[in-house]
Length: 178
Image (spheres, rainbow, N blue to C red):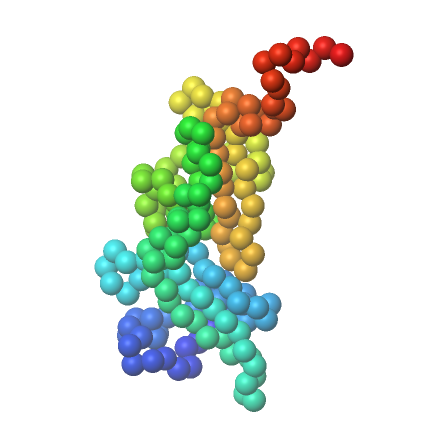
């Protein structure tokens, strides 16, 4: 039912009296581990992601909930996102269900804050990939959900660059005529 039945001595008092977040409840119901949205941490200005792991006991199903620094997880995930080829003006980000940044190698994207590209967020509401316009430039995005979390990975870049990457390579002496 979401009540805390045990906690370590280091658990902040307000966390002990708080019901667990919906994602942690979902982990128990689904019987599989689950990561949460970014939530406020125990210290002012801190952000946490809950990792919920369900398990069976002789007293019934229980869920172990561990709060992990969102900044720490972000650094880890951003290192992977930073490996996405960046031919120019490519943005990559992991967003939670509230469109809050979980991780991004982009310097302007801050963990725990709503993602700043409002045009992209509007386009995401219409589907997992497609086009949109930002400051007069046509852009394309693609997204995919992250299993066992309410997150999604999103990559967006200028439309021209997306199309050029999809074109077959030709040598200068090829005309394309057959």
